[in-house]
Image (cartoon, rainbow, N blue to C red; front, side, top):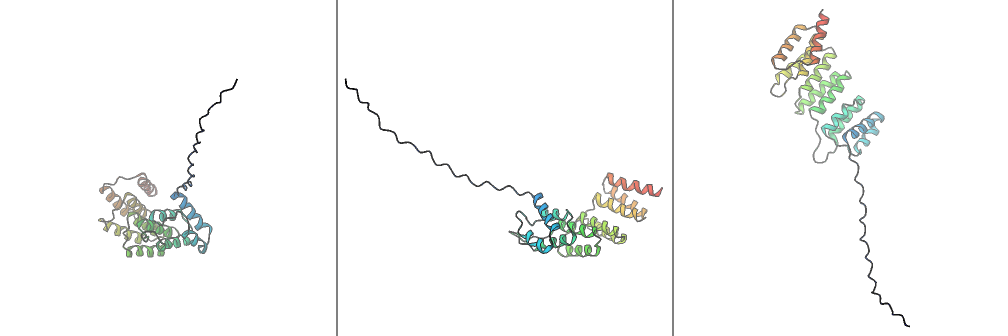
Length: 224
């Protein structure tokens, strides 16, 4: 007995799976300002300027703007290299527009110079700031006042105070400014002037802070 031949349908061509897309390169991790500031500070502390300068100019993620420059200066790098970094920022190539120092970067550099006792250099930089058409704010004037008084020149500090008060349209003394002025006068034994400045502060509608009251208490304790 003959077996029936089986008739098979023609085999269907196998479908090849579509090619898998090649994995794209992983996006680079975002560069955070705090990391850039830390790297810049480490470069300034660990290298002589001749080596630090090219490292800074080629540092990935370093954007030469006011925020970054001021934050670097506030980390208190070595003074000479901080000043050279301050100058480099103004001469470095910035995409789109040249970087110009503003009141924040100037004030940060003024603070470093005053803290180091470099008062003539601080005043020279303040004059440069004014020539550049950058208007100081209350923080700038208060910084200069503080370091002049610490250097023993209370009269010069009070001239800066009067200059700030004369610019009320552009620069209004803040609570911090008034408190600093009161402390300068009390520490110099000029209590009557200090009380007048305190009264002016209250008349301006500024409420004394804990720091202000601490200055007053210390003065009263010293006066007995």
